Length: 132
Image (cartoon, rainbow, N blue to C red; front, side, top):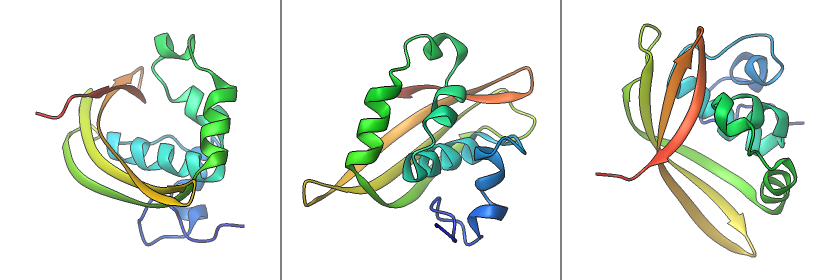
């Protein structure tokens, strides 16, 4: 069982991303959603990854492929580099992050600038953007 939250905050999983993954709470910021989505990859909560995608993208979500990707990799850390907007009162925000993982005996880094949008009070992952 994972005790500390994989998202990098110095809180137990049960006090950080755990309540989001369990459906007890909703992320209040774009960064919270991004961190909880990373944690969902670590703990292989594929349903959460689907449910936090923009509703249009949910139609094309391949749960088996995502589960395979999450299962084939050992996630080793998350670094949030920059957050632009995405606060409690915003409707849109971006988060630049790096997620490190081991795959095939090699350490890799996934770097992404993600766009998030809030709809009906809930944050959703929209897309990866090109870095400027």
